[in-house]
Amino acid sequence: MRKNLTGKTILIIAVLLIFFYGIFGIPKGIGLNAWKNAVASRIRLGLDLKGGTHLILQVMVQEAVGAVTDNDISGLQTDLQHNGITAKSIFKPDPKHPEVIQIQGTPPDRVGDIRNLLDTHYGSRYTISSNSGNNWTLTMKATEVQSTEQRALQNSIETIRQRVDAMGVTEPTIQEYNLGTNQVLVELPGVDDLSRVREIIQSTARLEIHLVVGGPFPNEQAALQSVGGTLPPEDAILPYGGTEEDLSGQYYVLQRHAVVQGNDFRDAQPSVDENGRPDATFILTRNAGDRFYQFTSQNIGKMLAVVLDNQVQEAATIQQAIRDQGRITGLGQDKAKNLSLMLRTGALPASIHYLQEGVVGPSLGADSIREGVTASVVGMLAVLIFMLFYYHGAGINADLALIMNLVILLGFMHFSNAVLTLPGIAGVILTIGMGVDSNVLIFERIREELRAGKAVGAAVEQGFGHAWTTILDTHVTTIVSALILFLCGNGPVRGFALTLSFGLAANLFTSVFVSRVIFDAILKRKPRGEALSIG
Image (tube, rainbow, N blue to C red; front, side, top):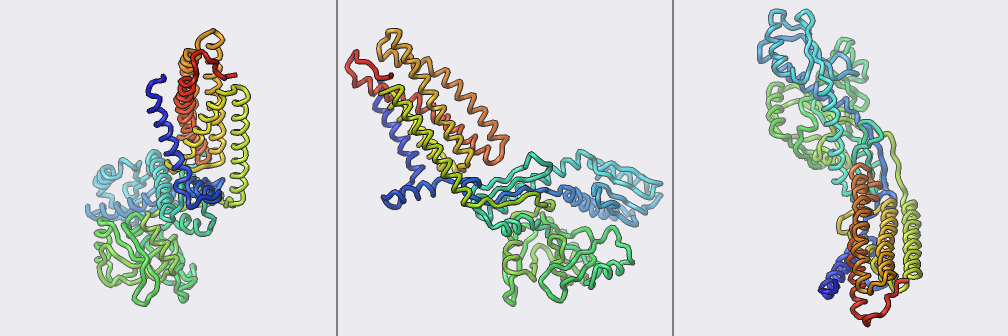
């Protein structure tokens, strides 16, 4: 083991310098404050240390099911028309059960054709039943409902993540909240503007374009009377929510099925109109553009309404066919900017309800940092003093290995862009304890070999050789447990698991390789037969 001592020493110094750079970088100055600032700028702090926003969101997945059946209603209308089959109405009879579609008033003499069409195009997703040949009921299968809801949850998580990334938040936590059903956990370190977060996330950006049936009306009752006092199932009444004061408090009757909806938008950017007022321009996907062109070509002279979050933003008459580009006016500057951001990052498939929200203040984070660092320093000093007291000269060896272990771990936090949380600090402290345990195993084994009368060199050789298997077993089992925590846990738990895992990996390097190199360097300089200072 004494061979290549110079090469091993160079390797250790190189590793030490690399991770020192990871901790401090290149400090701007030579004073203590410059070094503190260097560390603070390179170690990312989690929500519990830095402060920020904590949210638990409920995804209303039934809306996603409703969006699927809305699209299928449109498809049913088209398919029946192409086959020359008329239907009095196609609608969803119960808003609480959006998975059910009814077709009423079909020709009794076309029962076979209708059954064949429905089985061919919709039989894989729906259970189909008929009543007297004139009415049909399509009920979405339970497996399809479950799949749609799960897909809506995952799409919501990805969309929220894209929006948060567009805000420039560093290392957010956005994941499924396993303590609830269809819930999302959002943690944004360093963000304390809760209203801004709500505006970006809560605004579902369910931007849709609907055909206007009638309006504007001065109140909801007048809108209802315009359709005979009973709202048809294929229509909806929505309030005006734009910036035109003359239309404030008024209502529109719209065709319930959207011509264009959130996922049809390919890009959107804030801009200004010819009068310098803020608006948002959008570009549709190719398929949506073709569909929109066909629709507007057939409905020139009718009105379209732009609906955002179930409020009419504006309504305008179709002057000519529109393919893939449009403009939404009547927006304030902030609203135009936020709307463009949300459309670019994709529309949420369902609306969001806030179950829990709060802001962790930076003062609490500062207290956590101070107490965590104090605990780490006190624990580290106690361990270093104990090793010196109990193992004398060999204790210096152990202390150097422990300090290098800490340097490697903190440097890794920067290189991996990992976030340091309060549980992460606990992981650092636990790593120190595991490092001491490794050195104790090695040193006690060396003591046993020396008591058995073996020479110093042979005792060190046997001590490291016999202790290695035990050290490897304990570290591997703990790392496996930490990896399970990392895969299954949320933000703080993942922070603990990450620091513990890499700290243990670093400890294998320092307690076995580095400590052995130090022993070999000491033995190389000792006269033959001189005792080893190991307590």
